Length: 372
Ligand SMILES: Cc1ncc(C[n+]2csc(CCOP(=O)(O)OP(=O)(O)O)c2C)c(N)n1
Image 1 (cartoon, helix red, strand yellow):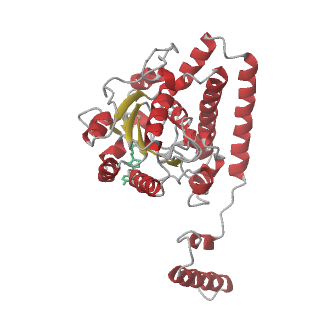
Image 2 (spheres, rainbow, N blue to C red):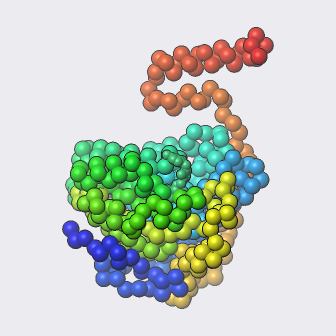
Image 3 (cartoon, rainbow, N blue to C red):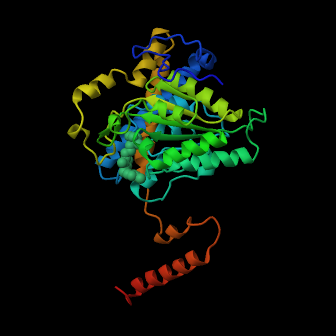
Protein backbone atom coordinates (compact mmCIF):
# COMPACT_ATOMS: atom_id res chain seq x y z
CA UNK A 1 0.00 0.00 0.00
CA UNK A 2 1.48 3.32 -1.01
CA UNK A 3 0.38 6.42 0.81
CA UNK A 4 -0.13 9.26 -1.66
CA UNK A 5 0.96 12.75 -0.66
CA UNK A 6 -2.20 13.84 1.11
CA UNK A 7 -1.67 17.49 0.29
CA UNK A 8 -1.49 16.84 -3.43
CA UNK A 9 -5.12 17.37 -4.43
CA UNK A 10 -6.17 15.01 -7.19
CA UNK A 11 -7.54 16.85 -10.20
CA UNK A 12 -8.08 15.38 -13.67
CA UNK A 13 -10.15 18.24 -15.12
CA UNK A 14 -9.44 21.91 -14.51
CA UNK A 15 -12.40 24.29 -14.04
CA UNK A 16 -11.91 25.24 -17.71
CA UNK A 17 -12.43 21.60 -18.68
CA UNK A 18 -8.83 20.85 -19.59
CA UNK A 19 -7.66 17.31 -18.92
CA UNK A 20 -4.72 17.10 -16.48
CA UNK A 21 -2.47 14.06 -16.76
CA UNK A 22 -2.00 12.11 -13.52
CA UNK A 23 -0.05 8.85 -13.70
CA UNK A 24 -1.66 7.53 -10.49
CA UNK A 25 -5.26 8.01 -11.53
CA UNK A 26 -5.31 8.09 -15.36
CA UNK A 27 -5.63 4.28 -15.53
CA UNK A 28 -8.76 4.51 -13.35
CA UNK A 29 -10.62 6.57 -15.96
CA UNK A 30 -9.10 5.10 -19.14
CA UNK A 31 -12.18 2.94 -19.80
CA UNK A 32 -14.61 5.88 -19.61
CA UNK A 33 -15.44 6.51 -23.27
CA UNK A 34 -17.34 9.60 -24.46
CA UNK A 35 -20.69 7.80 -24.05
CA UNK A 36 -19.88 6.98 -20.41
CA UNK A 37 -18.77 10.56 -19.77
CA UNK A 38 -21.98 11.86 -21.31
CA UNK A 39 -23.98 9.69 -18.90
CA UNK A 40 -21.93 11.10 -16.02
CA UNK A 41 -22.78 14.56 -17.32
CA UNK A 42 -26.46 13.67 -17.73
CA UNK A 43 -26.66 12.35 -14.15
CA UNK A 44 -25.31 15.65 -12.83
CA UNK A 45 -27.74 17.68 -14.93
CA UNK A 46 -30.70 15.54 -13.83
CA UNK A 47 -29.65 15.76 -10.18
CA UNK A 48 -29.56 19.54 -10.46
CA UNK A 49 -32.97 19.64 -12.11
CA UNK A 50 -34.36 17.54 -9.27
CA UNK A 51 -32.81 19.98 -6.83
CA UNK A 52 -34.37 22.98 -8.56
CA UNK A 53 -37.82 21.37 -8.61
CA UNK A 54 -37.67 20.22 -4.99
CA UNK A 55 -36.53 23.67 -3.81
CA UNK A 56 -39.43 25.25 -5.72
CA UNK A 57 -41.89 22.75 -4.22
CA UNK A 58 -40.71 23.68 -0.73
CA UNK A 59 -41.19 27.37 -1.55
CA UNK A 60 -44.72 26.58 -2.74
CA UNK A 61 -45.49 24.95 0.62
CA UNK A 62 -45.58 21.42 -0.77
CA UNK A 63 -42.56 20.26 1.28
CA UNK A 64 -41.75 21.08 4.89
CA UNK A 65 -38.01 21.28 4.19
CA UNK A 66 -35.43 20.45 1.53
CA UNK A 67 -31.66 19.97 1.59
CA UNK A 68 -30.20 21.19 -1.72
CA UNK A 69 -27.19 19.44 -3.25
CA UNK A 70 -26.52 22.34 -5.63
CA UNK A 71 -22.80 22.50 -6.45
CA UNK A 72 -21.97 19.06 -5.06
CA UNK A 73 -23.09 17.05 -8.10
CA UNK A 74 -19.51 16.32 -9.22
CA UNK A 75 -18.52 14.77 -5.89
CA UNK A 76 -21.74 12.80 -5.59
CA UNK A 77 -22.28 11.57 -9.13
CA UNK A 78 -18.57 11.01 -9.80
CA UNK A 79 -18.07 8.90 -6.67
CA UNK A 80 -21.34 6.98 -7.05
CA UNK A 81 -20.42 5.90 -10.57
CA UNK A 82 -17.56 3.92 -9.03
CA UNK A 83 -19.91 1.77 -6.90
CA UNK A 84 -20.59 -1.89 -7.69
CA UNK A 85 -24.18 -3.16 -7.37
CA UNK A 86 -23.32 -5.14 -4.21
CA UNK A 87 -21.71 -2.17 -2.44
CA UNK A 88 -23.72 -0.51 0.32
CA UNK A 89 -24.20 3.25 0.75
CA UNK A 90 -24.77 5.24 3.94
CA UNK A 91 -25.76 8.79 2.88
CA UNK A 92 -26.23 11.81 5.14
CA UNK A 93 -29.15 13.95 3.94
CA UNK A 94 -28.21 15.76 0.72
CA UNK A 95 -26.76 12.96 -1.40
CA UNK A 96 -29.45 13.16 -4.09
CA UNK A 97 -26.85 12.63 -6.83
CA UNK A 98 -25.72 9.37 -5.23
CA UNK A 99 -29.29 8.13 -4.90
CA UNK A 100 -30.04 9.01 -8.50
CA UNK A 101 -27.02 7.04 -9.75
CA UNK A 102 -28.08 4.12 -7.53
CA UNK A 103 -31.37 4.02 -9.44
CA UNK A 104 -33.73 5.33 -6.77
CA UNK A 105 -36.77 7.29 -7.84
CA UNK A 106 -35.80 10.65 -6.32
CA UNK A 107 -39.39 11.41 -5.40
CA UNK A 108 -38.94 8.77 -2.67
CA UNK A 109 -36.57 11.25 -0.98
CA UNK A 110 -39.33 13.82 -0.90
CA UNK A 111 -41.73 11.63 1.08
CA UNK A 112 -39.76 12.39 4.23
CA UNK A 113 -39.51 16.08 3.36
CA UNK A 114 -43.28 16.17 2.85
CA UNK A 115 -43.77 14.36 6.14
CA UNK A 116 -45.64 11.36 4.76
CA UNK A 117 -43.01 8.72 5.49
CA UNK A 118 -40.27 8.12 8.06
CA UNK A 119 -37.74 7.06 5.44
CA UNK A 120 -38.96 6.93 1.88
CA UNK A 121 -37.46 3.78 0.41
CA UNK A 122 -36.50 0.21 1.21
CA UNK A 123 -32.74 0.26 1.96
CA UNK A 124 -32.36 -3.32 0.74
CA UNK A 125 -33.66 -2.56 -2.74
CA UNK A 126 -30.87 -0.31 -3.99
CA UNK A 127 -28.45 -1.00 -1.14
CA UNK A 128 -28.77 2.60 0.02
CA UNK A 129 -29.46 3.25 3.68
CA UNK A 130 -32.03 5.85 4.70
CA UNK A 131 -30.95 9.46 5.15
CA UNK A 132 -29.47 10.15 8.59
CA UNK A 133 -30.18 13.62 9.90
CA UNK A 134 -28.29 13.05 13.14
CA UNK A 135 -24.99 14.58 12.06
CA UNK A 136 -22.07 12.14 12.15
CA UNK A 137 -24.05 9.13 13.42
CA UNK A 138 -24.02 6.99 10.30
CA UNK A 139 -20.25 6.63 9.74
CA UNK A 140 -20.37 4.36 12.81
CA UNK A 141 -23.29 2.44 11.31
CA UNK A 142 -21.32 2.10 8.07
CA UNK A 143 -18.30 0.70 9.90
CA UNK A 144 -20.49 -1.78 11.79
CA UNK A 145 -22.07 -2.85 8.51
CA UNK A 146 -18.63 -3.16 6.89
CA UNK A 147 -17.39 -5.33 9.76
CA UNK A 148 -20.43 -7.53 9.16
CA UNK A 149 -19.52 -7.78 5.47
CA UNK A 150 -16.01 -8.77 6.52
CA UNK A 151 -17.29 -11.45 8.89
CA UNK A 152 -19.65 -12.78 6.23
CA UNK A 153 -16.54 -13.42 4.13
CA UNK A 154 -17.59 -11.03 1.35
CA UNK A 155 -14.18 -9.36 1.11
CA UNK A 156 -11.06 -10.41 -0.81
CA UNK A 157 -12.58 -13.57 -2.31
CA UNK A 158 -11.39 -12.52 -5.77
CA UNK A 159 -14.96 -12.69 -7.08
CA UNK A 160 -15.76 -9.21 -8.44
CA UNK A 161 -19.48 -9.85 -8.08
CA UNK A 162 -19.15 -10.81 -4.42
CA UNK A 163 -16.47 -8.64 -2.85
CA UNK A 164 -18.27 -5.76 -1.20
CA UNK A 165 -17.39 -2.28 0.00
CA UNK A 166 -19.36 0.18 2.10
CA UNK A 167 -19.27 3.95 1.62
CA UNK A 168 -20.31 6.63 4.11
CA UNK A 169 -20.98 10.19 2.93
CA UNK A 170 -20.75 13.02 5.43
CA UNK A 171 -19.75 16.64 5.71
CA UNK A 172 -16.91 18.73 7.10
CA UNK A 173 -19.04 19.62 10.13
CA UNK A 174 -19.68 15.97 10.90
CA UNK A 175 -15.94 15.34 11.24
CA UNK A 176 -16.06 17.22 14.55
CA UNK A 177 -18.49 14.69 16.02
CA UNK A 178 -17.04 12.11 18.41
CA UNK A 179 -18.93 9.37 16.55
CA UNK A 180 -16.85 10.02 13.45
CA UNK A 181 -13.58 9.61 15.38
CA UNK A 182 -14.91 6.35 16.82
CA UNK A 183 -15.87 5.19 13.35
CA UNK A 184 -12.38 5.95 12.05
CA UNK A 185 -10.80 4.09 14.97
CA UNK A 186 -12.91 0.96 14.51
CA UNK A 187 -12.48 1.00 10.75
CA UNK A 188 -8.70 1.30 11.02
CA UNK A 189 -8.06 -1.31 13.68
CA UNK A 190 -10.43 -3.81 12.04
CA UNK A 191 -9.35 -2.93 8.48
CA UNK A 192 -13.05 -2.70 7.66
CA UNK A 193 -14.02 -2.46 3.97
CA UNK A 194 -15.34 1.09 4.21
CA UNK A 195 -14.75 4.36 2.40
CA UNK A 196 -15.29 7.62 4.26
CA UNK A 197 -16.30 10.16 1.63
CA UNK A 198 -16.24 13.63 3.19
CA UNK A 199 -17.75 16.39 1.13
CA UNK A 200 -15.99 19.44 2.47
CA UNK A 201 -18.52 21.94 1.12
CA UNK A 202 -16.86 24.71 3.19
CA UNK A 203 -19.82 25.29 5.51
CA UNK A 204 -21.65 23.49 8.32
CA UNK A 205 -24.75 25.67 8.26
CA UNK A 206 -23.13 29.03 9.21
CA UNK A 207 -19.82 27.63 10.52
CA UNK A 208 -16.93 27.60 8.02
CA UNK A 209 -14.57 24.62 7.83
CA UNK A 210 -11.97 26.72 9.68
CA UNK A 211 -14.27 26.36 12.69
CA UNK A 212 -13.91 22.57 12.55
CA UNK A 213 -10.19 22.02 12.00
CA UNK A 214 -6.73 23.63 12.02
CA UNK A 215 -5.38 21.11 9.49
CA UNK A 216 -6.70 20.00 6.10
CA UNK A 217 -9.46 17.51 6.87
CA UNK A 218 -7.71 14.85 4.83
CA UNK A 219 -5.09 14.67 7.57
CA UNK A 220 -7.72 13.38 10.00
CA UNK A 221 -7.67 10.08 8.17
CA UNK A 222 -3.88 9.92 8.20
CA UNK A 223 -3.85 10.31 11.97
CA UNK A 224 -5.93 7.15 12.29
CA UNK A 225 -3.59 5.19 10.01
CA UNK A 226 -6.06 5.25 7.13
CA UNK A 227 -4.90 5.89 3.54
CA UNK A 228 -6.24 9.35 2.80
CA UNK A 229 -6.62 11.41 -0.30
CA UNK A 230 -7.81 14.91 -1.05
CA UNK A 231 -9.63 15.38 -4.33
CA UNK A 232 -11.07 18.30 -6.26
CA UNK A 233 -14.69 17.66 -5.36
CA UNK A 234 -15.96 19.68 -8.30
CA UNK A 235 -14.11 17.41 -10.71
CA UNK A 236 -16.40 14.44 -11.38
CA UNK A 237 -13.67 12.51 -13.15
CA UNK A 238 -11.21 12.82 -10.26
CA UNK A 239 -13.95 11.94 -7.74
CA UNK A 240 -14.72 8.85 -9.78
CA UNK A 241 -11.03 7.85 -9.92
CA UNK A 242 -10.19 8.23 -6.24
CA UNK A 243 -13.41 6.52 -5.16
CA UNK A 244 -12.85 3.64 -7.58
CA UNK A 245 -9.38 3.12 -6.10
CA UNK A 246 -10.69 3.29 -2.53
CA UNK A 247 -13.60 0.91 -3.16
CA UNK A 248 -11.28 -1.57 -4.85
CA UNK A 249 -8.92 -1.46 -1.90
CA UNK A 250 -11.82 -2.10 0.48
CA UNK A 251 -13.24 -4.98 -1.59
CA UNK A 252 -9.79 -6.55 -1.91
CA UNK A 253 -9.21 -6.60 1.85
CA UNK A 254 -7.00 -3.50 1.99
CA UNK A 255 -9.19 -1.78 4.59
CA UNK A 256 -10.63 1.73 4.81
CA UNK A 257 -9.87 4.94 2.91
CA UNK A 258 -10.61 8.53 3.86
CA UNK A 259 -11.46 10.86 0.98
CA UNK A 260 -11.81 14.61 1.37
CA UNK A 261 -13.66 16.00 -1.64
CA UNK A 262 -13.17 19.77 -1.67
CA UNK A 263 -16.39 21.23 -2.99
CA UNK A 264 -18.90 23.97 -2.28
CA UNK A 265 -22.52 24.14 -1.23
CA UNK A 266 -23.78 26.73 -3.72
CA UNK A 267 -27.28 26.83 -2.29
CA UNK A 268 -28.65 27.21 1.22
CA UNK A 269 -27.91 24.64 3.93
CA UNK A 270 -31.60 23.80 3.86
CA UNK A 271 -34.57 25.76 2.63
CA UNK A 272 -34.86 27.11 6.22
CA UNK A 273 -31.50 28.85 5.97
CA UNK A 274 -30.44 32.19 4.50
CA UNK A 275 -26.75 31.95 3.52
CA UNK A 276 -26.66 35.69 2.65
CA UNK A 277 -26.41 36.30 6.38
CA UNK A 278 -23.05 34.60 6.79
CA UNK A 279 -21.14 34.45 3.49
CA UNK A 280 -19.99 36.82 0.77
CA UNK A 281 -21.36 36.98 -2.73
CA UNK A 282 -17.74 37.05 -3.95
CA UNK A 283 -17.06 33.67 -2.36
CA UNK A 284 -20.12 32.14 -4.02
CA UNK A 285 -19.14 33.66 -7.37
CA UNK A 286 -15.60 32.25 -7.10
CA UNK A 287 -16.99 28.76 -6.57
CA UNK A 288 -19.62 29.16 -9.26
CA UNK A 289 -16.71 29.53 -11.70
CA UNK A 290 -15.65 26.03 -10.63
CA UNK A 291 -19.07 24.47 -11.26
CA UNK A 292 -18.73 20.68 -11.75
CA UNK A 293 -21.35 20.55 -14.51
CA UNK A 294 -19.73 23.34 -16.54
CA UNK A 295 -16.33 21.70 -16.42
CA UNK A 296 -17.42 18.33 -17.79
CA UNK A 297 -19.54 20.09 -20.40
CA UNK A 298 -16.53 22.15 -21.52
CA UNK A 299 -14.33 19.07 -21.68
CA UNK A 300 -16.83 17.10 -23.78
CA UNK A 301 -17.67 20.06 -26.00
CA UNK A 302 -13.99 20.84 -26.68
CA UNK A 303 -13.50 17.20 -27.64
CA UNK A 304 -16.46 17.45 -30.03
CA UNK A 305 -18.30 14.81 -28.00
CA UNK A 306 -21.43 16.72 -27.06
CA UNK A 307 -23.79 16.43 -30.05
CA UNK A 308 -26.80 18.74 -30.16
CA UNK A 309 -29.11 15.72 -30.33
CA UNK A 310 -27.75 14.47 -26.98
CA UNK A 311 -28.30 17.90 -25.40
CA UNK A 312 -31.86 18.10 -26.76
CA UNK A 313 -32.63 14.60 -25.45
CA UNK A 314 -31.18 15.53 -22.08
CA UNK A 315 -33.38 18.65 -21.92
CA UNK A 316 -36.37 16.42 -22.59
CA UNK A 317 -35.28 13.94 -19.89
CA UNK A 318 -34.86 16.79 -17.39
CA UNK A 319 -38.29 18.17 -18.24
CA UNK A 320 -39.83 14.72 -17.85
CA UNK A 321 -38.15 14.34 -14.45
CA UNK A 322 -39.44 17.75 -13.35
CA UNK A 323 -43.02 16.87 -14.30
CA UNK A 324 -42.68 13.51 -12.53
CA UNK A 325 -41.36 15.21 -9.36
CA UNK A 326 -44.18 17.77 -9.29
CA UNK A 327 -46.96 15.32 -10.08
CA UNK A 328 -45.73 12.71 -7.62
CA UNK A 329 -45.31 15.17 -4.76
CA UNK A 330 -48.74 16.71 -5.36
CA UNK A 331 -50.27 13.24 -5.20
CA UNK A 332 -48.58 12.25 -1.91
CA UNK A 333 -51.11 11.94 0.88
CA UNK A 334 -50.51 11.36 4.59
CA UNK A 335 -50.43 7.69 5.57
CA UNK A 336 -52.77 6.24 8.23
CA UNK A 337 -51.46 7.47 11.59
CA UNK A 338 -51.27 3.87 12.78
CA UNK A 339 -48.48 3.16 10.28
CA UNK A 340 -46.09 4.87 12.72
CA UNK A 341 -45.91 1.50 14.52
CA UNK A 342 -45.02 -0.50 11.39
CA UNK A 343 -41.24 -0.29 11.28
CA UNK A 344 -40.28 0.07 14.93
CA UNK A 345 -38.94 -3.48 14.97
CA UNK A 346 -38.34 -5.93 12.13
CA UNK A 347 -40.37 -8.62 13.95
CA UNK A 348 -43.56 -8.34 16.06
CA UNK A 349 -43.04 -6.91 19.54
CA UNK A 350 -45.52 -7.11 22.44
CA UNK A 351 -44.95 -3.53 23.62
CA UNK A 352 -45.50 -2.10 20.14
CA UNK A 353 -48.60 -4.30 19.74
CA UNK A 354 -49.96 -2.94 23.03
CA UNK A 355 -49.28 0.65 21.99
CA UNK A 356 -50.94 0.07 18.61
CA UNK A 357 -54.02 -1.40 20.35
CA UNK A 358 -54.17 1.60 22.73
CA UNK A 359 -53.88 3.98 19.77
CA UNK A 360 -56.71 2.20 17.90
CA UNK A 361 -58.98 2.51 20.95
CA UNK A 362 -58.05 6.15 21.30
CA UNK A 363 -58.82 6.89 17.64
CA UNK A 364 -62.22 5.15 17.81
CA UNK A 365 -63.00 6.99 21.04
CA UNK A 366 -62.22 10.23 19.21
CA UNK A 367 -64.53 9.19 16.39
CA UNK A 368 -67.49 8.26 18.63
CA UNK A 369 -66.94 11.39 20.73
CA UNK A 370 -66.25 9.64 24.04
CA UNK A 371 -62.95 11.56 24.29
CA UNK A 372 -62.13 14.98 22.89
C1 LIG B 1 -26.01 15.52 16.25
C2 LIG B 1 -26.52 16.74 15.53
N1 LIG B 1 -26.10 17.96 15.91
C3 LIG B 1 -26.55 19.06 15.28
C4 LIG B 1 -27.44 18.95 14.24
C5 LIG B 1 -27.92 20.20 13.51
N2 LIG B 1 -27.27 20.24 12.19
C6 LIG B 1 -27.90 19.79 11.10
S1 LIG B 1 -26.93 19.88 9.74
C7 LIG B 1 -25.66 20.57 10.62
C8 LIG B 1 -24.37 20.95 9.92
C9 LIG B 1 -23.68 19.78 9.31
O1 LIG B 1 -22.63 20.22 8.48
P1 LIG B 1 -21.77 19.26 7.59
O2 LIG B 1 -21.48 17.99 8.34
O3 LIG B 1 -20.61 20.03 7.09
O4 LIG B 1 -22.73 18.83 6.39
P2 LIG B 1 -23.49 19.75 5.32
O5 LIG B 1 -24.82 20.08 5.91
O6 LIG B 1 -22.65 20.93 5.03
O7 LIG B 1 -23.66 18.87 4.13
C10 LIG B 1 -26.00 20.69 11.96
C11 LIG B 1 -25.11 21.26 12.99
C12 LIG B 1 -27.87 17.65 13.88
N3 LIG B 1 -28.73 17.45 12.87
N4 LIG B 1 -27.38 16.57 14.51
